[in-house]
Structure formats: structure tokens, C-alpha cells
Amino acid sequence: MRANCCSLKSLRNYSIPFTGLKLGKHQFEYEIGDAFFDEFEYSLVKKANLKCLVELEKQETMLILTFDIKGTIDANCDRCLAQYPQQVDIHEQQIAKFSEEDMDADEEIIILTKNDHEINIAGLIYEYINVALPFITVCDDEGNTPYCDKEMLESLNKLSANNNNNEADPRWDALKNIK
Image (cartoon, rainbow, N blue to C red; front, top):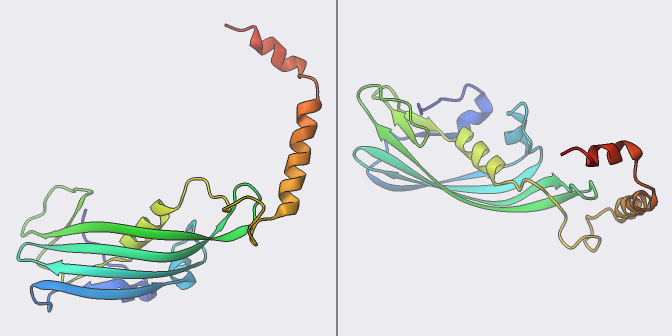
């Protein structure tokens, strides 16, 4: 993977100039909010209140980036469709190696050449947050949280009860005989 420099001006805040840094560990802190996700056209996340702590360890031949992202993301419950705050607690690590020649692309390691003087971590942060979202999002403690839409749950239960009382559709009976 090649180091990418973000062209969007608002995401330039997520570039870390590593050439002037001494060997050792350096800390960076970022507030990730709605404006961050607005920069990504098809983002699943629209609203968030996250804090991202990045520890960059500069070594002779590589950079080791450790990400610690905590906070809430506004998610929609797949059960009642209400919006609620989904807690996230993300811990990830990324390695960026210095190389004089072009190396084969590796999805696990970022390659930095002698022409690279900074690394933009906006894409990494975005990816880590989106991957951390649960595949199915539901309100905690169904029907008992201030976010849960109780009317929607009652309507769904009523419709579900009506479907269970109906006789089987004869079109499906024909399919049962196929073996």
C-alpha cells in the first residue's frame, strides 16, 4: 500500500509530517465529528463524536502507528428504525516502512519513499471506524431505552402476529415437493 496524501483541504489536518520528528514515540490527538464524515461521499456514518489518539513511533526503517478511537456514532436501529448513539472503542495498529525502491503493494504495510515527508491518516481512521460498526445495529434493551421507538415495535409485532394466523400460500406448497 502506498502512502496517500489527501487532496481535500479539511482532511489535511490529518497529515503527520514525520521528517522533522526525532526517533521515538510521539502523540497526536484528533476530534472526529460530522465534518470529517461529510468529506467521504458515500459514508455509512453521518454523525459522530469521537476522540482519536494516535501514537506514532518513529524508528530508523519504519513508523508504527497505534490508533485508539473512542466515542459514539449515531446509528439507526435495524429493529425499530430509531436513531441511537452506538458506542465504539477501537484499537488498531498500522506499519509504514521506508523504502528506496518501489516495492510490491502490500495491504498490511504502507510504503513510504524518500519523496514522502508526511503521512495522511484520514483514510485509516475512516476505515477503522466503518469496519468497527456492527453489521446489525440494534438499540440496547429493546423497548426500554429512551431511543427505542416503542410504537414501531408494537406495529411490527402486530403485523408479525397477523402473518402467523394466515393459511399457507399454495404457491409455496408446490415448492415443498421439489427435491
